[in-house]
Image (cartoon, rainbow, N blue to C red; front, side):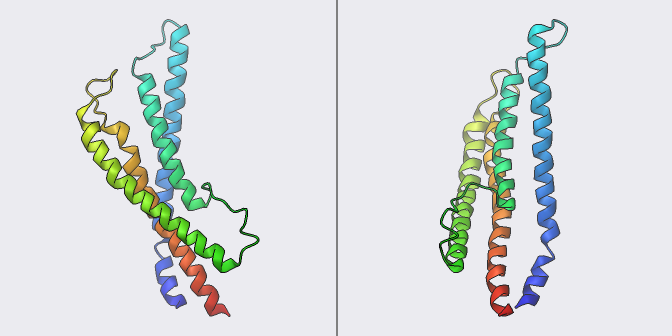
Length: 174
């Protein structure tokens, strides 16, 4: 059985790459948020620095991307919010089962985020525009939800694989 896990483990660099790309996107969005917000605040008090009307909407959109994408990153690191108060008192197999159950539930949520989020982005989002930027579709305001859903699916598949691997590799080691 371990040889199958050795073969599957060879795709780990692909997960690492997806993680690094999503992390880079979050970092770039944070920098954009800081620059735009700083420019907007300083522009209110310094006459020669512009205070663009679109700054608030762009900052809020960037923040929504960062919020959902960073939640997807937390899945990979195992840093998402979870209840572990009873883990020390339960048998290891029960804890593993509950971890798998939680991962399946999050995977279902991710699929819902993709389907419903895409429906909203292409439906409601495509029909409207930003108030301060009438040429930019509100699609971009709704798009973070399905985008994060895709990242969550990728990281949840890896998390589920790691749980299953832990079960089978441990049993063979006995």
